[in-house]
Image (cartoon, rainbow, N blue to C red; front, side, top):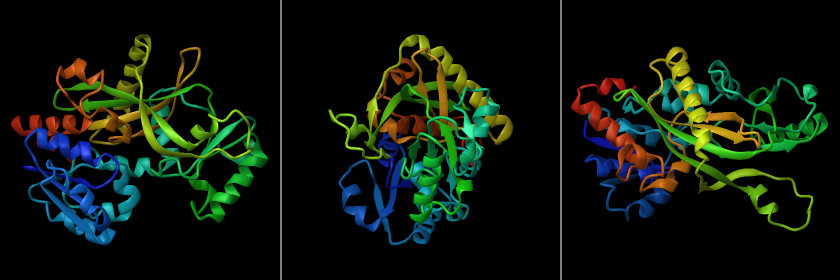
Length: 334
């Protein structure tokens, strides 16, 4: 297999840039209105525009013999979980994690199985006795999330998202304690080939309008929203890293047991660091996250492992190349 392909969104530029650095042919499959944009990059060998999601799946499956699809947050969210099941082209990573990521409660259960500290969650709005954040399913970049100070505000907010048809039922959401602290998104890469967990970077999400509101010297009584529009780089104090690594390793072990064949490649533990130094993990992403786009030339952490420019996109390409060279490709593809 000599071709890497992905969907034109999210983190596709660094995925294909890294694949080209590792010697692969590169294919971008993207909505027709983005073809001109992606065609300008010399590291993308071919850009294919699709008119609808079914056509996108057909184009992906055209490469079932020699291609490897790299998933990112836009794959399931925009192509759709049912269509993704029809993809016959091999996927880098564990495609069995997709259904866990699509369900907030199932996601949190994996963190709890890993004995990773998580915020308190509430089964019903009636149980709420503190400030909470209400999260919608899927990789929507925070769209529809809202903060509520009490049970009545939770009910009011749920009625709004139901009316806006962002969810079909309140059973889809998770009501989670709002933990005060610094949000830090810890990025990892688990290598089945090297049997090694790597910390690949840290980012902070830049969200609108909550980040815009806090710059104002007065209160406009505007409800904060949490739609991610960008990412900021972060470096943690070094004393936090052993704990972060332990959480990552515990998560890898849980995925191996609960979601065979286990963790393959990039993932992220989305966390809040409290002033006590405690870390609460409020969510995970089981594939490459957009915050890795900060580190096209490598993060401060990836340099410590590789001593060369190593984006997560390139790290994926490197893992595939190592697997090919050792005739172990089946260990990194599903």
